Structure formats: C-alpha cells, structure tokens
Length: 155
Image (cartoon, rainbow, N blue to C red; front, top):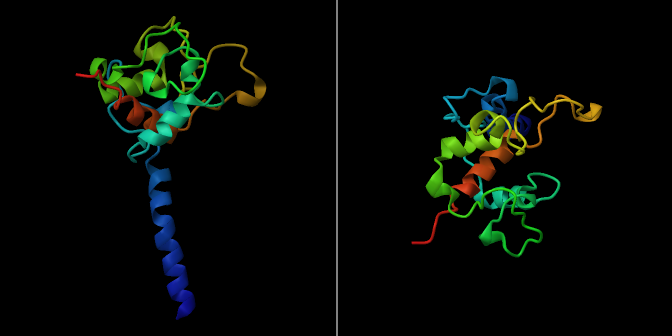
C-alpha cells in the first residue's frame, strides 16, 4: 500500500511538468496573427522577476547591450542603439511584445539587428553547435514578456 501511495504521489507531483511540456509550442509551430503572437508559448504565466533576470543576463537575453531599462539601473552597460524599454508596456500589448521577442525581424522590421530569441530563422553562418537551437526557451520568452508588461510610464 505504501508503494502505491508513493507512486501516486510521484505521478501527481510530475503532472504539472507533463502539462507544461505538452503545452509548449515549438519554434517552428509558433503562429503569428500579423505581428502578434496571441497564444502563450507554454500555457504557463510568465514570472516577471525571472524575466528581469533573463533580460539583464549577458548569457541569455543580453537586452541591456542595446536597450536602456531604468528599473535595472544597477546593472552595468545599458546600450543606446535601440529604443528604451521604459514605458514599453504603454506602447505594445503583451501579444505584440511576445511577437517582438520571439522574432523581431518578423514582427517589427526584417532588417532589425535585434535577434529572434525563439526562432530557428537565424540567418547564415550559424555556429554548428547552435544550429536548431533558440536563444531563449519558450518559458524564458514568457518570463521576459511578463517583465516587459510591468514597464509602464510613470503617471
């Protein structure tokens, strides 16, 4: 009986993981509606705190290399080659932000220097070990979008 209870508990504990994996949309299956992506890539709400970490991380989003984000002023080396992300939630909807983060070349401008963070359309001369991989995971994209929607202009 203890073994049955232990197996049931283990199965129940893993159920959310299985659901998350089943709901994740692969990069090639992402559906755009114009420039927006209306469906969550994971079916799991993004975590704004994690999104801020991804956005600031030099090894993940590295968004600060190009964008200023005043709430992350303690982080070094904010770039000025792209628009500030301050107030970005007042300029774009969450669905538009998701589209931009997934693939700015599709959602904004085909000549954008912003990389697509969840696309396999990454151009030419890709390092062999990176072929078929995305910069961010689907959940990291949702986390970044969750953070971006917190960036509203002060009123």
